[in-house]
Image 1 (cartoon, rainbow, N blue to C red):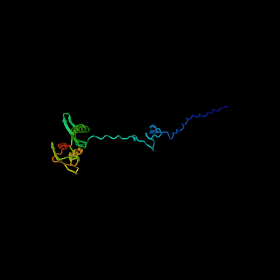
Image 2: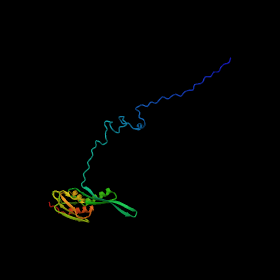
Image 3: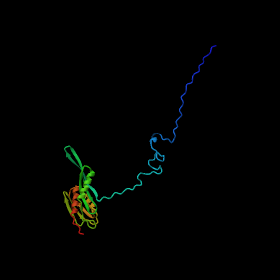
Image 4: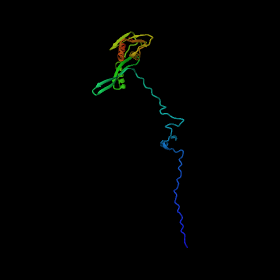
Length: 213
């Protein structure tokens, strides 16, 4: 008898299919995964108490008031000075300042430095060094008319009851910071140099007759 050899194909093993990965809705992904969570679980709140009650930094702090300066100051002239040296040019700043306490004390100073802030500090120290005391009346005015000349600046100051301060240029700055009221000043020289005019006003106030107490 003939026997028939029947061969059946061997089934190849199939690879197991991976189960789909389900990402929970609450799991942060991307840039949110690297952001630290707040104590209450809100990743968008930065140091606050939530969306409804945000707390600002320094909200409860009270700002300390700065002490008022003894003298008020005003810049009347500022210019850049150039000096030519062997290596080139060197620049610096020259500042003229009027300083006073509006109670009869006033001074004019000049400062020069490579920085404007340093030049202003030098000018303020120079103004305090050359400060004078103006003899004012009970109404903060002057007793009589005065005239003074400094370099190319020449001015006249005389009392003007009830008119306030009638002056311009650097003379007004000197009179206001000195606390002088009810006066009229006139510049009788063609000079426009603010420093010379301020020095002339300071010289005129210094020549006032002192008030006897």
